[in-house]
Image (cartoon, rainbow, N blue to C red; front, side, top):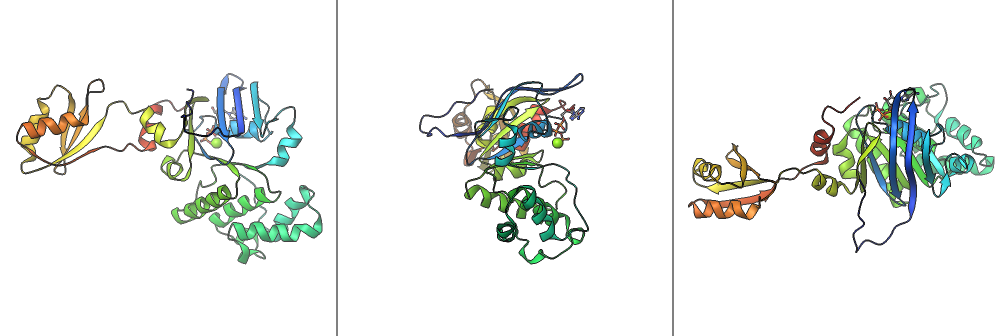
Length: 322
Ligand SMILES: Nc1ncnc2c1ncn2[C@@H]1O[C@H](COP(=O)(O)OP(=O)(O)OP(=O)(O)O)[C@@H](O)[C@H]1O
Ligand SMILES: [Mg+2]
């Protein structure tokens, strides 16, 4: 599904792009001709149910896995032909990463800093800076095994930040965290976005990404089914418009009135208010107001139902999980 750029939106530089990307594992097509575009500065939600192909795509972008066909670029660099250069501009946090339980926090980060050939003199400063950023400054001397799950996850984030990459590829960084720890991770990601990083974060927990991310892509069975702003996603998949109406006085009378209208597909009384599903073709919320007023009901409230991305996603992927 392609995405139109609205006319008042300034053209933005692309940070990550896949073109007809394919990855097969035997007979399984994990990624199926995927076209993704992530712009610089995006906090980009990569959404899909189990087995949708999120991890496979991120591993290709992180140069750990070769595509079967198609191309992928990070900051204009080809992930196959320029893999070494790509590794320097990305920070990849896998869905499961080994933790070195017997290591101290600072030792662990220093080790990764050395892997990236950061000179010893600079490493100490860099380690302190990333620990500050993820809120673990007071845990610098702690053993990793003694950190909570949320803290270990934040340490994982610190690790991918050690070489100051421009693009972060985070595979379900909030999985297994309690609500408070999730909020902490979200706050760190927002801070990183403010610092100008481009962040791709995968998840199947939509309600969080909807608030956190400025753009999302939804994939299913390796295929892109939506890419664009979260708002747009809701609209894209909205099958029939739904409005909520409230009247002063007898709601049953209003219910009867609406049931007789040709443009109403379904109407239900829920907690004293009317949930009206309009006919997708000719339905218009103003018709609801008109019908009620004409029938003698006193309209107190009329508003369209907001459809969260979660609901959208459930509908578009129903029964499609591999
Ligand atoms: N190394 C592999 N060998 C064989 N099949 C694989 C391999 N890695 C992934 N797959 C298959 O590719 C498909 C996509 O898997 P992938 O891990 O990319 O999905 P995902 O969206 O990350 O799912 P989850 O939400 O469960 O993490 C699945 O059908 C999976 O079984
Ligand atoms: Mg995965």
